[in-house]
Image (cartoon, rainbow, N blue to C red):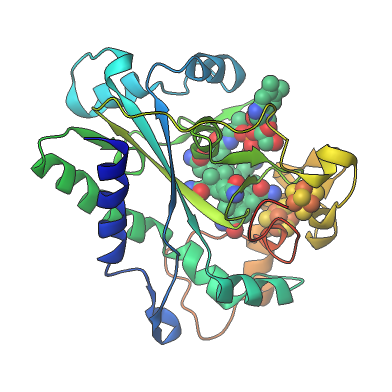
Length: 281
Ligand code: B12
Ligand code: SF4
Ligand code: SF4
């Protein structure tokens, strides 16, 4: 397995997805998510040790996640990590950019149907790799994948997809906290650990805030103005205010024609209608 083959396999799986459509909005010809951008990292990158200090010792190394699935100890350097960022479509971002109080219908649905979509995507990808004789672990499919309440950083995941994306060269954090990629900030991530020695993607940045205009020269701050509950300021992002707003907008502004079911919610107004929505500003 090499980088080229890995990327092609991911693209083929993406092209064959059955759930990547806005059927719920009766627009089944429209995809929910665009083709992912892909980055690679080494399983023995020292950044994983940094994450154990920075986020917490509960944050998995690739080896630990691999062991959860295969019950087998393996050396870090035999593993690689694949980070994938799925961009929201231009239509979804255009609809979201017009909203000021609650997310657009397209945003609600693409967020709400992300988990089943990732189950399909990751299941098909790991099965395809297994057919090629390659062992792999999709973080989103691990039953142990969950969050932990920390005193310093709020709710933190046992695997932070966007820190992994930063590590795999896909982008840097913005003032709002979202990771800005070459396809912008309106993206969602997933990660795969694979038993293969892939070439790591170059990190074309020196600091973790480099691509955000506010941290570059003090300008912009558009995401501050997009937040309906003032959860973003020059000091950063208030996660508790942001978290609490999910239930508020759902109670006040839920569209009549969308069934809430077991959708997980996200406001995401700070991810569209801003200079970093489609790319690196
Ligand atoms: C928990 C969580 C939330 C919670 C947080 C709750 C709480 N009270 O803490 C809430 C509800 C706020 C939330 C909201 C949203 N979320 Co959320 N969330 C997560 C989740 C599950 C875990 C995040 C995590 O573990 N963070 C860990 C902590 C440690 O990270 P942090 O504090 O953000 O990191 C900061 C520091 O590490 C620092 N830093 C980084 N490097 C360095 C280096 C040094 C030296 C130093 C000092 C500091 C430093 O900068 C970082 C950014 O400020 C992830 C999924 C996952 N498993 O990864 C999704 C995730 C982060 N969310 C995502 C999204 C899309 C959203 C929403 C847009 C909702 C939506 N779907 O519409 C909003 C956006 C809010 C915002 N302004 O960014 C995406 C990220 C998209 C992106 N472009 O970044 C993720 C990755 C989900 C996914 N699968 O893609 N989320
Ligand atoms: S909107 Fe502006 S300030 Fe906010 S994250 Fe994007 S570039 Fe940075
Ligand atoms: S997702 Fe959170 S931070 Fe972003 S606009 Fe909504 S409430 Fe504000």
